[in-house]
Amino acid sequence: MKKYIATIDGGEGGDTVIGAASADEALVDAIDWAKDGDWPEAGCKISVRVESEGDEDDWAEEDVEILSSDALRDSELLEDGEEIAMNEHEFTTERIIIMGDEAYYMHENGGTRGAHDRQCGDGVWRDYPVEPTREIDRREARRLMLDWGYAPQWVAKKTKNINA
Image (cartoon, rainbow, N blue to C red):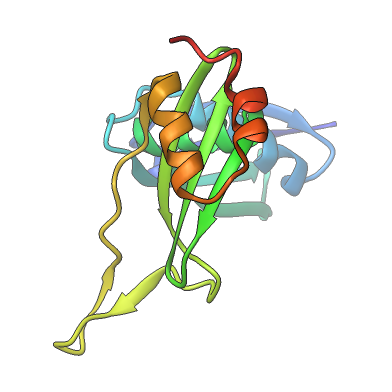
């Protein structure tokens, strides 16, 4: 096992020593270490690099995006939550996600065309304006699902355990 020096942004964001069999393995551990740092709530991009002690030709580097607190919440909802309803449009997708006994409404980019941007009339590519993820109550979840065409029996079953 070799010792690698892991740095963030050339050392300005800190450094640590990691033991690993290769630079790629050390880089994986270094990225985990870097993500646990104290980062701005709005998120940021950092550069993580590992270099073997005594062998400057044995290194690996990667740019890493630290997600904003909102984006991190959204990714956790998609990974760990249960999607109970989806309303997909050409350029956006609306979802209702259940995590525990709470429901969340997500309105995100990318619809049936898989587009995550759209071209406005002025010819400039911009992020599609979407609503932020927000917690919703049982009544709103039921109203949305019915508006999206879900059968009342399905709606009752899937929203039964949402906090009222």
